[in-house]
Image (cartoon, rainbow, N blue to C red):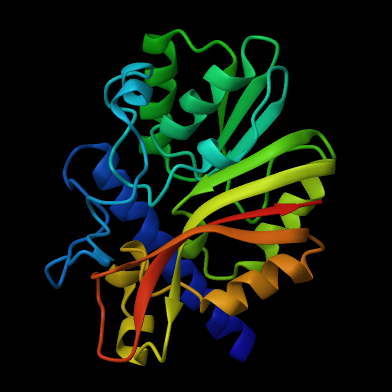
Length: 258
């Protein structure tokens, strides 16, 4: 009975996430997140700060590919090289795929995986308009990647893994599809302190990148348990989003090697 209840809860979470991001893709919602307190010089607005892209980068990709949903720029830290195969977990409208494609060139390729039809449609149209023939998008959940084992050089992901109800199969799948010596670089939301159950149980806050955020040390532990080594936190910053007196949320950019 407990297992059935868990599956039902996970199904509800995924439905809420998919509905929110489909609405964003259609232009009905401008962002996945809203803020609760003003940002200071140490605390940042999750909806507007910390995405990491500069204007030169954005000028190289189709207009509409960047929907403001990231919490970092994992491509900048992923050591992307010409000829590599890159996989983006939760590719959305394609912004990080297109940035990665500039690095790997025509000799390489980029695969974006997303579960939301509206996002996939938008990403494929962006690829057509931008002439990105070395980028493809596949429909799937990131817990079950439609990618052969040991075929990927680099994995990137931007503010998506926190949306998965169970992060363990996500990193297990990432480990499976990477080549030996390959690396994963993810920007994601993690928590610190005792986050109230009222937040953890809120489906809107699951879709808003807060409810599903793991404690940072637990998050790094899951990556380690999947088999990765040389795990390092490259960047970290706290947000004002849903912050309480003794808990809160941060974005981290983490790199790990198979």
